[in-house]
Length: 295
Ligand code: GRG
Image (cartoon, rainbow, N blue to C red; front, side, top):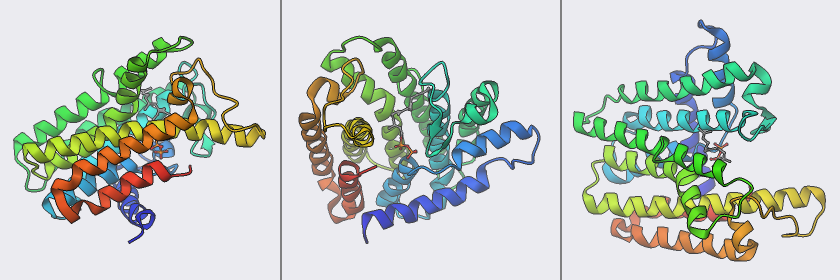
């Protein structure tokens, strides 16, 4: 199966589950529930929950419905981070996924609360894991999600990014920011699938390395696409418009070297999956998709 079709088919499962798990927008408090649904159902690749499903499938080949509450929880946290990132006190963006940002439609107060509500609801969902999981697995998943989303993970990366604004960052600092801001939640998505799939230590370590490498590559490619996309829109030469004050790979290494680094990371990600044999084929193709994507 073509990897694009495969991802779309898995994303469809996630989209259907999201409509079931999200609170009804007619339910009180209406504005808050509308704001939560507005951003979550505005589209998106659903890469993180799809990864959770794929890793769980690789390991335990059970019904994927069993891991859905955890996969959905991670997607809700991702959406909360996007809503907050778009706020005037952060990136102050007007559009996300081709639609007006949450605060533009509902106002800043409700947008902050919609993000807060998505984050807290995510943890409620994890308590709804019902399959054949042990309490230890559920506790491990809870800790994994808290760490990946929190001060040692995504928020830690965002904090470091804010502090670095307008400064020239070192290579180590840049990697710290990307590994945390973007990489942490992707790693969480993979590790949650692994924990629920009953991975042994060797499998968990291999999958964590895979996640680390695709996460970094994902962010490098995102930085490149951001720059190239803007330059194309403005009719400028490729590479002529890199903002050197931003903590991005192209700002430090240039476009060509950044592309090479992203490809190297993907090679490393694929190599580590050899312990799973042919069963790892979808995860290997997904790694290639990350580096080849054009949007
Ligand atoms: C403000 C709490 C808080 C956290 C901010 C993740 C993050 C940290 C901010 C989002 C802004 C951003 C561009 C982060 C880089 C990660 C990234 C590329 C996010 C977009 O992820 P995709 O491409 O988005 O998976 P879709 O729309 O497909 O879900």
